[in-house]
Length: 345
Length: 87
Image (cartoon, rainbow over all chains, first blue to last red; front, side, top):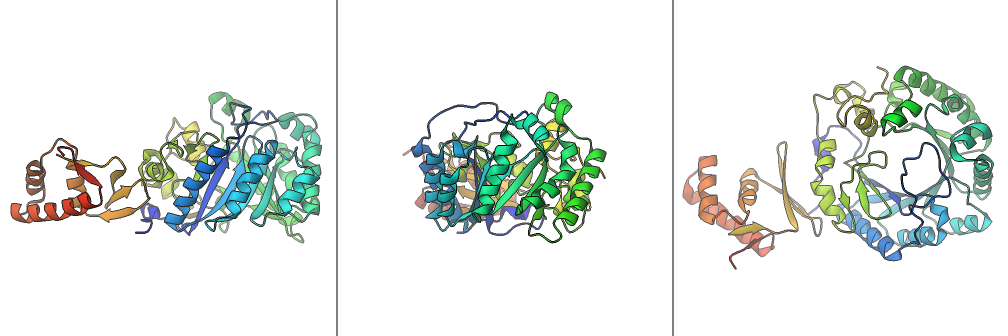
């Protein structure tokens, strides 16, 4: 008895045997970034029993579904508790059900010892460092004094050690002028991948402070794309363009959101979310188990469903776009199937 | 009265009917009649009530429904996906 293909509920062609899990195994963070979705910063010690239980649930699901998991380990700040991080990495490395590991970090706590440990693990495919500005002034206003130089230093260390390193630039109104400068910075650091992705504004206050209107976003995405083409032409650096809206820039770019089909977000206490940007708890992996939540969550079924009334679903770009459901949800009165408010067509 | 086990759930989505074993992840594609039977296994409907309900809804002979019902129930009881709350 294999997995009955959830993708039969949708005509988007993105299904394969890859599963993506983003596991925020730690709640604590050493920074207080102005745009962060993290409300609570609970400084607890790592509970290894919880780590084990969550891992075994996820491992069993991958085995049952015959899928290979690409897992991102994040927080909080994952390097704040290296004992938990490397314990998990060891667990994951021992399972054939996990393909690759990415670590999502603010890049302020990576030292030479960390690099030595990272190098020992074969499944670590990427360290993603958040940079929210192309210069110290922009980045530090968002993430705190001194954080830009620390992050840059970490990136250099990682690259010098031969570790695949990417930059995540979370785009919003406070750093939009930096966006088109990010490709130049990424190229100068020999970064492997640059991701420029919109912030999900979850409240009216956040919307007022951070939201970028669609027409302006179009200009920003176009400028980033053109700069990346120029800066990366003789480099191995790539611009990540697999997310919604990029298809509007170039028909060969973009991707339909995998939420509900082949991705899940797990918080430190086992709470399951469709996506970290969509704070709609759908169950708890520790108490419900992943199978029960995955098969029975009304929210996940809603996201799998064909919705012929949805403007994004009937759009000619829908195969490789479909909009961001989280941004739509928060911007459009909690309607998951409404049009992406930052779409410019 | 028959009841669905707490580790099992059913789903009707568009033209698809499914039975989920939430404990081990198994997914069974089932047909509309089986889905109806399972949805009526709520601990309140007697077997006779379930058969009668199916006969009315699907316009088939009672004897045929009874045989299909008994065959399915036997499998489900065996797999412990349903149980008899009278026992």
